[in-house]
Each structure stands twice: as C-alpha cells, then as structure tokens.
Image (cartoon, rainbow, N blue to C red; front, side, top):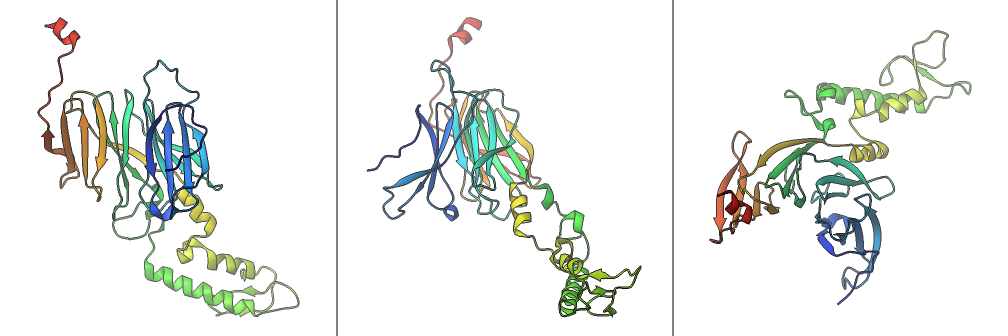
Length: 315
C-alpha cells in the first residue's frame, strides 16, 4: 500500500494513466478543479511517487453545494508529446506540454450545453487524425475530429499540399546542395567568403566579384538544412509542430439516450465507441463506409428510468 501526497483539497473525480512511452505517470483531477500529475520514482515497486505538474482548470474552486463534474483522459498516442484531455464543468479542453515540460491549455472542444460527465480519447492506429468522444448531461454523445493543418495532403502527392513538388526533384535538389556544401567547405580564398555560381560543385567561383549572383558558404549550409530542400525538421521545428494547434471539428452528436449520458469508451482500435446513460442502455457507435457515425447496437439490463414528478404533473 502507498499514498500519493498532493495539494488536493477535494474528492478525486477521475484518474488516467499516461501512455507507456512517457513513463509511469498518473494524472488525476479533484472536485476543486485541480489536476495533479504524479510519476513513479521506482517503477518496480510503485511505492514512491513525485509530483511533476499541477494546474487549475477552473478559475476558482466551485462552492461545495454546487453540482460539479470533472473528468480527464490521457492521449494514448505515441507522437505529438504528452496531451491531456480535461472536462471541467461544461467545458472540454486539451492541455499540451510546452517547451518546459508543463501542461498548458490549448484547443477547446465547444458545443456542450450541460455538465460534461466523461471524455475519451480514441487510440490512433494508422489514422491521420484524432477522435475524441464526450458524454454530457444534456443527453448528447459527441464525437470530435482533430486534424493537424500542417499535415493536409494533396491527392496527387504524399507530401503536404504546400510542398507538392515531385519527390525525385526534391532528391535531386538535396543531392546538389549537399555536394555544394561539401565543395565550398574546403575553399579558402584570401580569408573572404567563397562564392559559388553553380550547383553541386559546378561553376565554382573562388573569388567574389562585384555584382556576382553566387551563393555564400552560410547560404549553402542553410540550403542543406532547409526543410524545403531536404524535407527534414530541425529539433526546434519539430517542437513547434508538436505544440501547434489542432483543427477541431464536431462530426457527430447523438441524443438517442434521451437522458443524461454518463460514460463513453473506445475499443482498443478506436473504431467503435460505447456510451451509457440514464436510459439503462449501452449503445455502440461506428462509422459506415461514408464515414457517417451511426448506432450499430443497443444493449440493456432491462432497467427502465422511473417517471419524474414533473412528467406526472404534465399528464
């Protein structure tokens, strides 16, 4: 037995383990609107934990007499850095690591008209986008699609639309500029910058003439490292890509439960969504061939919700 020590002043509402590739981490959210992230110091005994991050998801702790709802779920994907999906009252937001390794608020998933009871981030197996499901007190199950604008592909190329040049042309340029950098790196002309008027060592000028349109060593090195030429991201560019925002789109909203929805959960491949609500039913949702989400199956325990007093008064 062990006990995590954190600055939590309310009941624990939800917990979620991080994906294995980031270590043994556990995030939990309490009724005062605080999120704590703990990491195991000794993974073989899991008896010692340390706090690695904490942040508040509401401006202030809700009153004790108020009805509250808090939930969270780690992004199960291995790419894009650590991302945490948090539902706080009637808001849903993604939190993402910044350059200091701390969670910062990012995209908001809008459209909820009641307390958000549960959130679930789908496993991403081969998709170019993410799927997120939410359960809401307003009786709706919602599905959101998250896409990276920088990863939009054109139909005729496997590269992003903004870089639709032919791959063979890119490889040729890469080879030319690599040879360019190698050739001029060995030149030393009177202590000045060597200038190159050709590509890949062709047309080398060992003296900078006035009005020359040649390329300096620093320029050649920048060409060799350029993403446009080589298609390779630097560490800074990769970090910027990981912190860049998603384009969020609500692609489905269902109210078949007719009453409050409490839980949503994806299957291990992220292709089937299950939901459970106050109607005593479990519904399974799946996209058809046209990518439209539909209810594929309904399971129930035979329990029926009792008629509310206001319903009796209406009769």
